[in-house]
Image 1 (cartoon, rainbow, N blue to C red):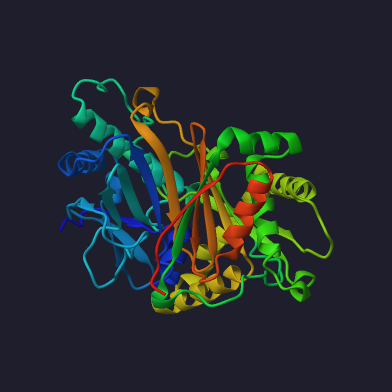
Image 2: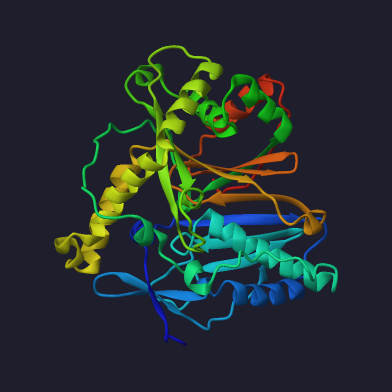
Length: 416
């Protein structure tokens, strides 16, 4: 094993490493569905080519005395047909292993990644590089002039952009009450249930335009109402519903990093009165826009990043730090009802888009989590849920159907 190069773990990765569990493996999946069945041998070659473009994924996470760190590894990725859970466990301190996995099933190419390596944006870039190499191998000469490389250097791609762009401010925090979480039993054996919810993108966008809000705000408000309809009446006036939204910080800072570079903002509503979807979506939209200013984001991130530079924290052994981080993460999770991650409109190169049917993805979670992918005229929600009860998803689907939106839903089977 090569260990000539080692890299610091960014602060977000430290959180993922400290809070990993059998149910919430801190992994995410992004998938690309092609129009023909996948050839395993070609996909294997494509992955080996793709890691030459993104060597940042070819690392092994190791435990130091004070912090984890990453070192280069020559472990070879092996493509297999899908036979494991979505978002599998991709980190085990006792095993030498890669922290990503490429599988296929039918026409679908899956990339599962441990979130300590990168975020959804970085994962999608790596997936698209794999897909492009696969299509080049499948049709020699057809896509030779097509490229996905941004031109960023290896140092830029490996950059810890949190450290680069955020400084040294106070550690002030605002205390907030715990948010509402759907009741009922969680699935046995640390399982998650996954749903794919498909709808016409133009139809839902027309609804958002009519309301004068963003697509994210409309869907965020719809999720809030779906959760409200599951809440016991006595709790509606006491427990708020909070939606956490990851924000791609590359849109605010000149970073090409292939590592994590995102922040979360929260939108909260207390259902102490009746409210329509239109009014809630407008409220959601205003609250979200207020938090997406560069000044607001920088203030939040400086407070978070400063933790690493406090001398007493730096000197504490890793196992104690992990206990503290795990405790703080649980405290933060109690303040969030649902995570809603909009990965945006997928725009592969025009030359290869004719070969691609769709994109989707999921993220492991101890609570409700929904991704949003838009490709051509298909908008897909990838929903992860640890609960037996599926009423929240049903409420969301029914509310959209009642507004005249055609919906298709697919769900994984779980062991009861």
